[in-house]
Length: 246
Ligand code: 6PG
Image 1 (cartoon, helix red, strand yellow):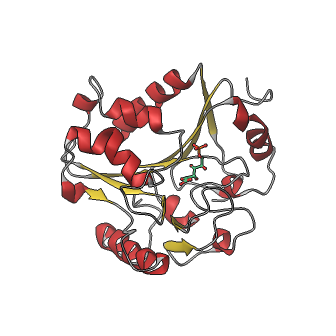
Image 2 (spheres, rainbow, N blue to C red):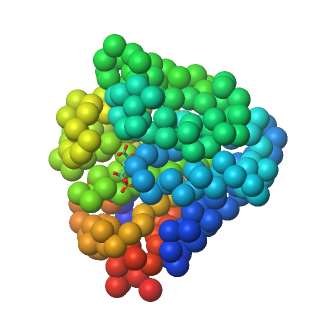
């Protein structure tokens, strides 16, 4: 699959409706028994979803013992730092609901270097998956959340970066971020993000309308290159939706 993959676009009335639609999709994707895996994202767009997961009635609908939580990219800072994506997810829901420790898989930003963290996380993903190679008929994740940056980046895959073309590595260090915050990052690559039953982009606010227009028009931007072995869904709020999207 490539960026020409058919995408479903859903427009929610506002940010609250976007979060409600996202939490419902997440609950539909996670298994009630056995295990399932969700790959989280950072930035502000998923905050509403994360808050809902920490509150009733949604909290009571998640089979916490069965769901494993990964992070698609993180800033190379301690989890206590406000910039940490996993720190945010813990604060907003994982710590509040008491998700089992063994089910939370942070990118190890306490490693000595971003490259070391990338290697450790790649090994952890492979061990969870049980193989070194991804099989499109057996996705690693049940749901992958993605965001869209104002420059068209997604995860920590920035315009012009070599990481955009990576086909064999699962996780990479990004020593130079393409935009703020300018801290090193660690990111999953496109083929690993793609290994999912559903990829769900969350995009809100009028500030995203122009870049979204460019992505939907097919411009070669990182977010346009994202694909999924399963469904590819863009969930927008009305303020972010370009005119071309009804
Ligand atoms: C990060 C993200 C990044 C984010 C987009 C959108 O760590 O910065 O994972 O890819 O999703 O920049 O961010 P907002 O939701 O804050 O607009």
